[in-house]
Amino acid sequence: MRRCVIEAERPPLPPFTRDDAFRKVRLAEDAWNGRDPARVALAYTPDSQWRNRAEFLTGREDIAAFLTRKWARELEYRLIKELWSFDGNRIAVRFAYEWHDAAGDWFRSYGNENWEFDARGLMARRIASINDAPIAPGDRLFHWPQGRRPDDHPGLSDLGL
Image (cartoon, rainbow, N blue to C red; front, side, top):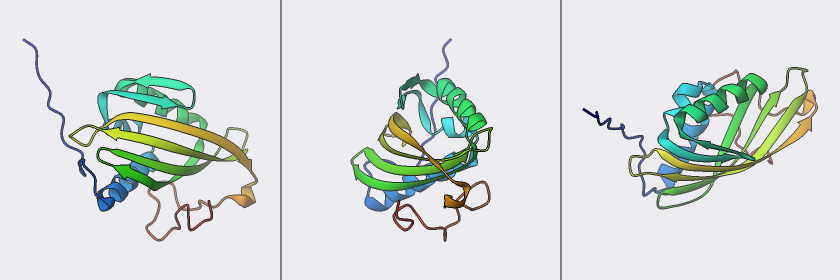
């Protein structure tokens, strides 16, 4: 006998209002700053399709494995996402994150993401384009303690990014 697993909803649900889209973006940022691959993967459909740079992934298992590799390489990762646009069940964001490699070299990675959600608020598709720019340690702008960005910390536009 085959069991049917019903996924829980992940509010806010589409179609998104402006407030919903802002909230969805912040929830995603918070989850990624938590750097828990298994927890982050639960925000995606079981068969979610990803393009991250030139890497193509399908499903939560691939997503969790990818994030595990990512955060093992990108140390002291801190991310800020900003809503760019939204319509119906789609959201576009821009983002930047700072990190350093094992040699201690710092980078700021800039990118754009296109997200598509199912009716339960799970992300069914994520398309990300990202570029890495080396930065000097003194040029870092993301200085909050590891984890969620404080509400009073400036966003991308406030930082001139």
